[in-house]
Each structure stands twice: as C-alpha cells, then as structure tokens.
Image 1 (tube, rainbow, N blue to C red):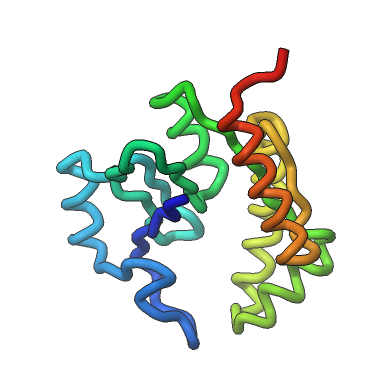
Image 2 (spheres, rainbow, N blue to C red; image 1 turned 30 degrees about the vertical axis):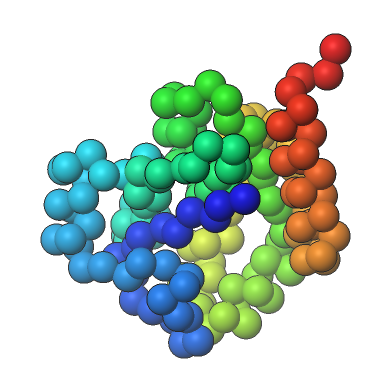
Amino acid sequence: MLLSKSWTTRARRPGETDDDYTFVDLATFEERIASGGFLEWATVLGEYYGTPVPEVPDGRDLVLEIDVHGAEQVLEKASDVCVVLLVPPSRADQEARLRGRGDSEDHVRRRLELGEKEIEIGRRIACHVVVNDDVERALGELGAIIESSRAGPSV
C-alpha cells in the first residue's frame, strides 16, 4: 500500500515534520496547478491542499488522505475508486482534537462548521464510513475494506 503525501500552503504546526506534508509557498502551488501536476486540489479555510499526480507501481494500492471535495474530483477522473469516509466519534471529540493540536479558537469554530458539511457530502459519496474512535481498530477496518475492494464486487 502506498500513502500519498499532500502539498499545502499552510504553515507547519508545532511538531509536524516533512513526512506530514510537502509545505510550499503559494506561487509554487499555483505553478503546480497550472502544469496539471495535481490529481486533486482545493482551498480549505484559505489555504491550498492538493495531491500530486501519483505514480503507482503495478500491484500496489494507493491511499489518498484527502477531503471530500478532493474525493469528488478523483471520482470524476477514475472509476475504480473506493471512497472511505473517516469520521470522529463525536463533535466533542473532533473539537478536543482540534484544540489539542493547538488550533486557534476561530479556526476550531470554522473547522467544526466545515466538518459538518463535509460529513454530509462524504456520506453521500462514500462506499464505507469508518469511525475513528480507536486508531488500531480504525486501521484494521480500513485494511479490511482495502482487501475487500481488491476482491471486487460481491455477487
């Protein structure tokens, strides 16, 4: 399995490393858009995020960690996509996670409002919904979904 690495124009949060995102300036991101270098991209709360066009070796699965608007773009380009919506166990948990990573109160409020809309869209386009209440359990469920998708549709 190959995990994509998104690009972003937002500032690095405390504790984030180069493994988390490719952090770039606005001009670099816009150059990549103009050259068709993104599979999907969007502006989220005033910052750009995008997934570079991937090179996936034969026999490998590509997992994209993207928002619902990116998922909609990917669905327009590819038919063999399995969208999995990852949701927090509750709004209170999501709020605590946002505050725990050091987000400002304004950002937490805006992100929670956006999250409600994203979950609504995600439930419409997703093949599966996974509740991220326990990381190991959620990863196990995601792995089972990938295995099932490889096997193709059940008869």
